[in-house]
Length: 224
Image 1 (tube, rainbow, N blue to C red):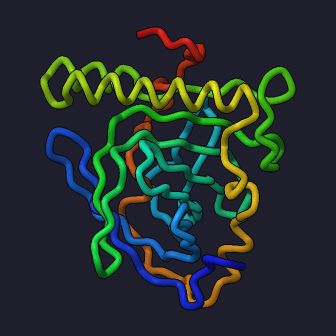
Image 2 (image 1 turned 180 degrees about the vertical axis):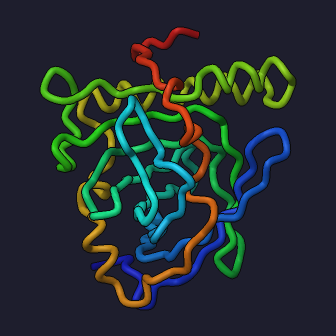
């Protein structure tokens, strides 16, 4: 398929969570067609499972499949349990990723995330009433970062604009993009050379795995 990387390449995502938490995530790039980069994070480590709405989203030994779009203010992760069962779609609001030579990427977390749970492990992504309501995560953390001066008012507004855009797109059947349905964990795992060492940090931003109280429903019109 056009864009599929013949030999998956290691990438390092340099991820800043304001004000000064810098983390490097190591993944394998399995597809790059200029419009989207698909990367695989394997065998993640957790001290305790990541819970969203009291359901396990990721756990020790999980894999996550990531979709990064040049020039776009979010990326998308497909989360799985240790046995490969799909748990949901996680949209992470970030600054557009900067891509440097040698597979080095840079981005800044803007705190907000959108979670859409899978239905019985299947990637149907149906809008209500046929599917689940998308959940906005970490709104309180965004507000605290703004109040402490860790995030500008402009970036805060941009984060909420992106969340609302994704909500509208989901309800109208225009988002997530088709490439998310075209790729599965099985397809990514089948690419040669996708075995990666364990990374201590399992994810990019998002709710703390020790709590799940950050999930809340926000209508497409927003509350800010």
